[in-house]
Image (cartoon, rainbow, N blue to C red; front, side, top):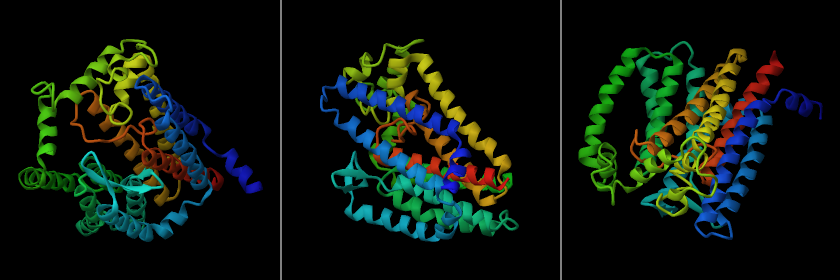
Length: 367
């Protein structure tokens, strides 16, 4: 009981508060979309509420479970990640052309959302245990070999967006580990050659079309460019204070597809306007600030790597999702953390916060 009291006293409640406010934004908009589209049973809203509750349970479990156990089990978690990504290709169900979900008691479970966290844990262990040699080409190659199975198994689902996230997590961890610029220049050349090869030999027609639509979304505004165009219209129509919850014409009248998942940011813009979006950016900023500020008091390399990797993951998903909604990046199916509808996404994001909370708590207790 004394240990629990100490943990609660050192819990970063400001960080948790910012996360919960973002979750509330998401729940309000999912509720609004459900009513506007005639779903009087509010099934999706109730499912999201269930997963939020489940995610909060896991958040507190991981907040009070010593994060050093993750270091011990990182290799086993990695093996588990590979097994699940391979199994979903055989046993999984296909949604929107991607075979990336397990059907568990009628609920969809997307393993790649949890694989992102496992990759952060594994790379944190890998680099923190090689503090002297981490800048060698050998260590870079070893870390790339750890990434490769996860990237490949995700890419062939095909889930290009999540595969890109896994690759960018690896790049972030390389930067945190202190690799020099020449490594990144070499990687850039490899990426250019690899991208050209993927375009010529691997990308399916719809994946190529997404990129072409991104370059010129107005070329086929009634078909392939429809999603991007409607999202931009929704974002621009909100004005200063928005049209009001439940009164967004693009989302409520079904002009905006995937409104509760990929394009929920556009719904927030339309219904809550600039002020609502500003609050979302404020809460994300608080999360990033609290986590990064905490690293100054952490004397554990493994913990620092995890926090920086976790912040990088949340920022990447936030940046990519918002960029999709305003036409800066192509549509790749990345959820907006804590806000978009999706059980696996919300639970994995809250688990990541729980792990970072534990590291912050331990750093305070140790000092």
